[in-house]
Length: 178
Image (tube, rainbow, N blue to C red; front, side):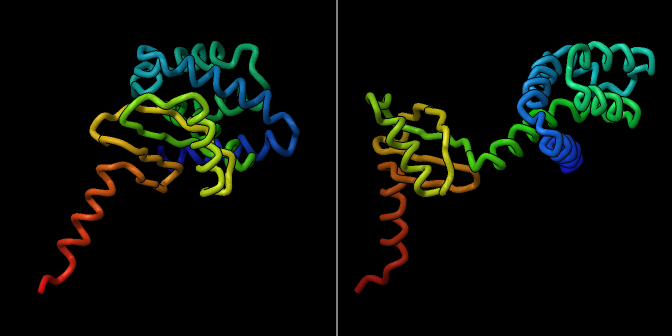
């Protein structure tokens, strides 16, 4: 995600927060993001050959029925020929919103499917470790052999059998024998 996209997202977020319309703007940003996630629309938006007339029609279509702040953002991006940032602004805005709510997302990898209640227990553990409310996505990874590997933000918690074996191997290699 580019620094420029994060700047636009932050500006939009701060103005939406100050006006008390963050939820409405967030919904509109999600809808715009979904629209520009379409492969054809994304190629059109990122294409350098986008004429002013086509850009204006695209901005009108994307902004139709959206909050004034979202329409203003679209117009600004169009005027500055930065519509290519649109696919990045949605995730950047969502990240700012989660941060403001003290929430985080993460991934938990398991060798086998989780049992009933285990995901909630892992989310609670991740919340205790990170100090935030955490929503986890589950991925199965048979290579782990057992246990779980969890990442929240930039932090990795490895409680997998493979991770433990790797740590044991490193300790054995680092120790001096005899």
